[in-house]
Image 1 (tube, helix red, strand yellow):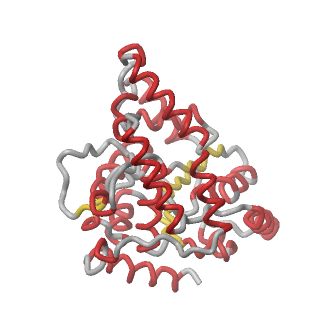
Image 2 (cartoon, one colour; image 1 turned 180 degrees about the horizontal axis):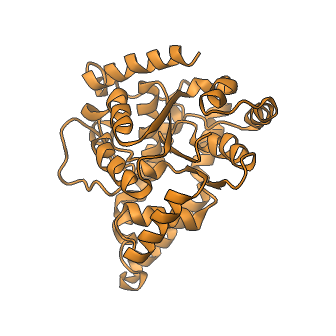
Length: 317
């Protein structure tokens, strides 16, 4: 097994499942290897500051030296931009952080299902955009590449094969898995250089206990869209506005801004609506939400990603 393993996503492709099952078990069973995941708040905070070019030089050097000389499994979706337009710049920034001698792990899902899921996620975090506003097909100069937030998605640059080529150009070892490969964990472990039946059994047992995130159905999406519109009418900041306010010092905000920011953070922390809608989608019999076909049909990058995904599914059987 490679001494330095980095899982970069994709976001909405079983990341939470992997972070609660495969990665911690692999780390525990590998001597002197640290697992850096969602619970490693301090390390993730420094990594995030580095990606956003906000880390002081001394701290930056210390972080880079540690990452280049330690054994670990790092799993953080923020290492790769949610927007394909900035995949290249985020990969370059990751190489500056960890060097090229690492093993990159990338999980993919069927493209149309993935597009639906990232749009659903954008609504869940408070981005008030219709599919036609969220998905775009020409480079957007108003977007900043170092903002790794799920606020917009360039469909013309959404290309699985192109993403993997960029990764293989920058890193020595790249492993790509379809999400379906979690049903055959032995193959996943084998490709990672692990041949251990006891460990395989541990991961399989943990996977069976894990409840996967469920997609919203049509009614749940309608409730979420109405809620987001209501939030906007009431004057609460949406996700993008909160990003801007977050970069200001709290003392710089007026009373109204402080109240809105605190209220939004409490809502985001509790995630009450998200939990209710997933429960409702699980209990009700309505169909899953589907993006309008005009959003992605006949776009070459999406179609080529579909073809490539089907090929890697065959390779991982």
